[in-house]
Image 1 (tube, rainbow, N blue to C red):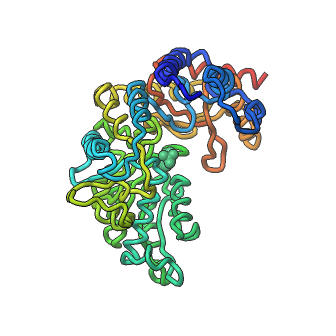
Image 2: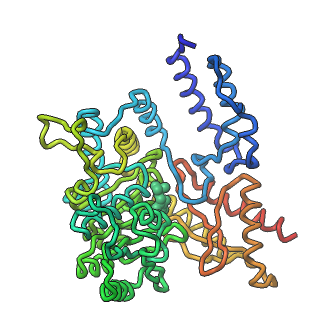
Image 3: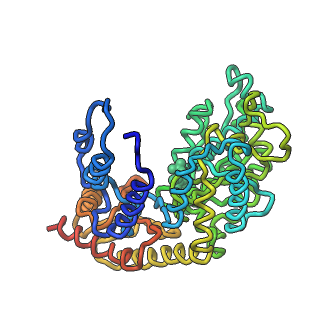
Length: 472
Ligand SMILES: *Cc1c(COP(=O)(O)O)cnc(C)c1O
């Protein structure tokens, strides 16, 4: 197929995408496929001779969409959203056509300069002071890894990359028991070890107990270990736990520790001033991550990583072999020096399109709607006999369970696991479960970019209907 008609097939793909978006509500939200079913229908060996593009495209349509869970479905209420606003999808098509490698200024001047601007637009949008600079990392997991590596290098007087960790006193990182598994993994990858992540207990409001934090740091020092940093949680993945960032940063400052704030999901809501109390004190942090690829509408991958002092990040991550040096261009930014990977996609373009096509007002309106609709749904479920709210709404996340009269407590976990899978099998909506205080609860998160009030309100009937079927 040497005469590949790129123009024709690009048009076909764009048409397909538009049709897909328009018919999303007719599809079951979660893939209704069994493990192995799709794989069994794909050839086991690569083709020697070229296939006709019409056949490839037809196979795509036949095999792939029905085997997908539809993250852009307006009734997707599972995990956290992974939004791809239509205008940002168009930007991705353009970035894909250019397929630039944005590792250095020289390899992508417009991408680099747009990235500097877009990180700054987002900084202003969420109300961070102007000393914060940043970069788009692929994911929050990577931004957190960068922060943990910075904690490591700073605590080792910048010798860790050179000398390794052998024979040193253990470095200790502190985070609450509500933080995301990406923090654990960052310690694994940074060579610090799971056992050196100190999970500080939380109080009744699920915020890190800062007295316990302080005590843990002092105990570790007394035991000859080296405290290196603290990770604060703004919007925990399970039920939306919020640390008191100001109090956590105050302890870290007294102890000379670097601080990282994980606001991967909840950070997008900070474009609304009325929600900023959730991260009060954030201007005291050294590093902050929030994911425009979750709630804001920038397609994966797009994680905004803000740092107060880029020098510490660059000192940790910049490596400059001769072939990467850019001569005669002082004062430029080479974003590969701000991240773990060398190669980087052009991520800023979708943020530019997103912020301009909807405006901060349009994005705020969506987030405010999601929060309000979620509160309405939680209130309706709370009033419904047999249902209990397990954790009250935090922004657009709450958890609930079915607990009908007469069903013993020890049978409720199983009942709720069955309820969640029956709801997802029915396909109208998609929810996931968690364990809170040792008990199964079902999470509900609104946040899909094009969700309407009826989509969120309709979850009530979908949940109640399946619950009734289960109990008959
Ligand atoms: C989703 C999430 C992460 C991980 O984000 P990725 O971008 O998928 O790596 C980390 N922390 C919190 C609180 C999250 O909600």
